[in-house]
Image 1: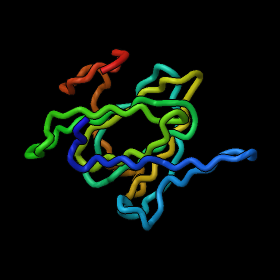
Image 2: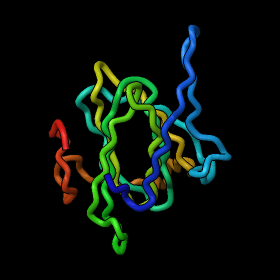
Image 3: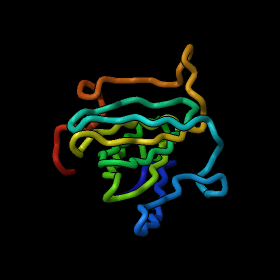
Image 4: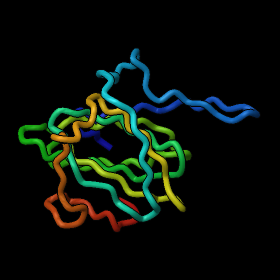
Length: 153
């Protein structure tokens, strides 16, 4: 899959032993680290879609730490060399990845494990409750060439 310009993926090294497992998600000395905004945790129920939206300033760094999600990105940026491209990533306990989504790229995710998946996001900007940098469209009624109901691409 050709990645959308600015989308980056970091495989996560899982270290496990008889006590459990550990993996680092994002370090300030990582090549893809920009700056710190905040860290938050969200959950998604199996079959539910959280999306679509994009940010004008914020870069997101998603890791699914429990269960599995299908994270999808769509490049609608005018002048982008990958305008019109769709990237799809199944991430979580069976495929530990960090997926970085740059400003201007629509994204969302769908829970694909029962009963839910747990997602950590480490955006490079804090959420501004009074003026959020979040621009949404309906998950199913929009111009994005992606069907959340499909099983495979």
